[in-house]
Image (cartoon, rainbow, N blue to C red; front, side, top):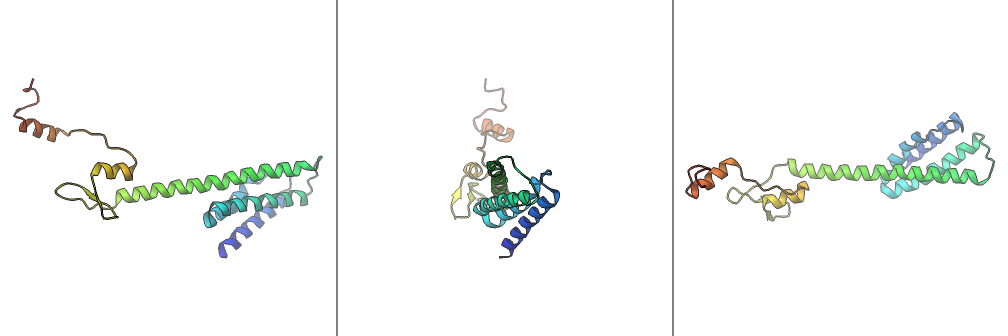
Length: 170
């Protein structure tokens, strides 16, 4: 309830600022405050409803400030444009927040201690299953590992094959 009152108060404040500055000065960016608060508190649907409310408040502030239009439909056309841009602000904030949350969860997975088997080097997942390191990294880091052989393993493999150094097998 407190969040709703905050969104309504922020929207009313934007309408007041819009009215005080007059119809010649655009304060479009000020309306981002209630849009972001609403989207953060109530999700995408709340942001969309807030965009509709901000559009209505903008119309009221514009008309009360004395803006006279040459054609009756222009005010609704302008309100539609404001609504679309207010929707873009709400959608942009929603998707940016979702992307940041996903990135944070991904980094949280990669930065916490991993239970690794000392024998097979598999990693225990939260679900209790054991995964190969490559598949775990691919799933949680989002990038497939690139297979390579380090110099120590290469020397060990050559030694096990009976070669004393890398050039003697030619």
